[in-house]
Amino acid sequence: MSQKFPNLLHASLNYRRVVSFEMHTIEFLRVGESKVIDIGSPDLPILKIKEQKGGSIRYKPIIPGSSIKGAVRSEYSRVLSGLPEDTLKSLFGYSKLFTEKDLKSNYDSYEIFNIIVNSMTNKENNEVGLLDLLFGSDFFASPTIFTDAIVSNEAEEYIGERYHIRIDVDRDAVMENSLLNVEAVYPGTRFTFKIIYNSLDFGVKDESPVDKAFNVLVSSFLDNREMFLGGFKSRGYGLVRLKKIDDRKFTPEELVGVKNG
Image (spheres, rainbow, N blue to C red):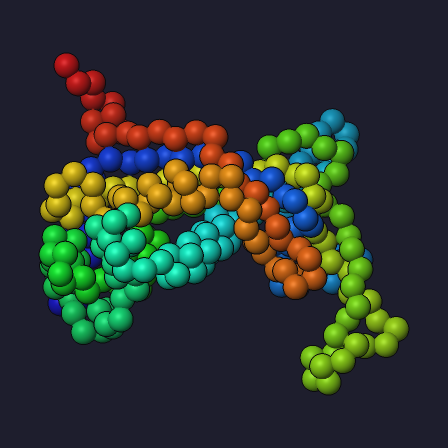
């Protein structure tokens, strides 16, 4: 029965919101691959794309949208978890952040849909976590999509190699005469990416708690925020600053090219 209504939760779209951000690296940034691909490659390379310009070839870093989404979800969750219940209700009209029940194992898609709608419309019976509805979970496809971040500024080089002491994890000690070379994006590099949000019809009037949570996320929480992204944070990597540069909303009619009036 769990496959009977696979797309029910995304059956009705109120609007789509597309928000563009610029990301500025303040420190070296590592969002990397897990293994060496070529002889002579650094021990820890990063994700990058090859660009041919004239007769020369250079590499531009790329940050997967999944990495940005994971970092943003973690940061947003950490901050909201520190707010008292009455503040959450004032912001979103909803206070439950995380789902405690195992909905996927115990209910079919139709029942989950009804539980979500009941949580959205009944202020005294919030069973589903707001952050699960905003960012997605194992029982609910995410209405919030993060695109990959691509380089937006011109520079001769975007990527450098740095050397660090190698640690023997078995002994938890420094390995003698052994250095680890890693690739990292230079500070001062700029990226752009988009967050695309699909506002779903939960049967509530005006904005749903999920709509409100997204609005707070992109309108105040992320704009001009400094946060950490990627690996090697304990070695001083990953500090970036985000800035909102565009924000557009599209109705279903606009998405299919229908003009009102």
